[in-house]
Length: 126
Image (cartoon, rainbow, N blue to C red):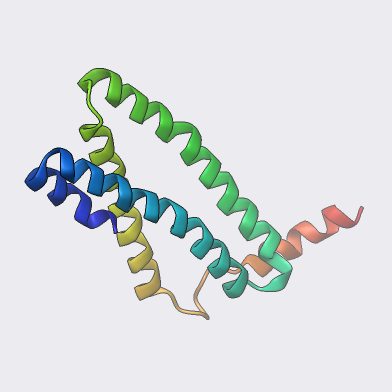
């Protein structure tokens, strides 16, 4: 969705910013739900908690850092165009990363959360 935002800003000006905001809103609402569903369906049940913890930690890091960068860009450029272009670039990078992960993922060669969970289980049972 966010791939269409940058050309829309270049072509339509302020109307493009409105289109970009709608597309980013749709992306920001759909991506976390989709990723949580994929994690729950794709990871072994023993390691779902670890996988969701890693996901939420990275999401919280993103929420802490990205707002500071967007606020700084807004203060420097006195416009929402550059911050929204920054967010659309991040969304595009995320889409490319998701496609690459999907393209090169193999079930048997994937990172094994079960091995990590097996090492953590004795610590939890104490």
